[in-house]
Every structure is written in structure tokens, then in C-alpha cells.
Image (cartoon, rainbow, N blue to C red; front, side):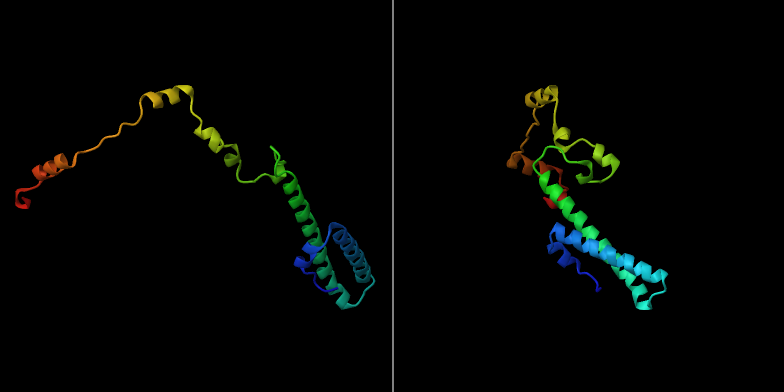
Length: 139
């Protein structure tokens, strides 16, 4: 059996993938029997290819399952642990952005009653101030 192309596997349905997996496993068992009974060298070299193909089929099946689960849980409030982003333990335990931005009632009142002051400088006064502080040879 030739190498399987994974992009072709992705187009197949789950039942087709399972039937192909069954065929590959049957072929692998035949090749293993041939190995024990002293089969031809070309059959022995085929074992590696078949094992790789089985792994590819299993990978595509699991990826499709996970994608279907992600789609099913898209609108839900909670995600299963294996669908959540892994990240690091410390990052997972951090407060959310919303929780970080929340303020106490006291903080809100203080900000409301004592806002940041805005100051402006009159242009004429500023020019005079600059002229006064400059050395004499600039006048």
C-alpha cells in the first residue's frame, strides 16, 4: 500500500475513516505474520509505512472529533478542560481583564469628586517667561 495523503483523509467521513483504519490494521497484522514466518524483505519494509498510515488516520479522526466538540461548545458558558487554552498555571489563575478593571464604590466616588485637574498656559505669558530665562546673548 502506498503512502496516504492526509489532505485526502480530511475530506472523508468518519465511517470511511474507520473502515480504512480497520483495513490498515488487518494489513499490519498480515505483515507481522509474514515477518515471523520469514516473509519477503519488501513486506518487512512495508510495516513502517502501514504503521505511519494508521497513525495518520487516527490523528485525522481525533482532530475531527475535537473540531466538532469545539463547534458544539462554542456558544456555551463553560468549556471542557481539554478544550480550554493550556497556557501556564500562573496565567490560568490570573484575574480576567474584566475583573482587573472593576473598581470599588469608594474608588469610583473618589474619582468622581476629585478628577484629574487640567491646566493650560497662556501663550503670551509663556513667551515672556522664556525670554526672561534666556542668556543675554540670545536677546
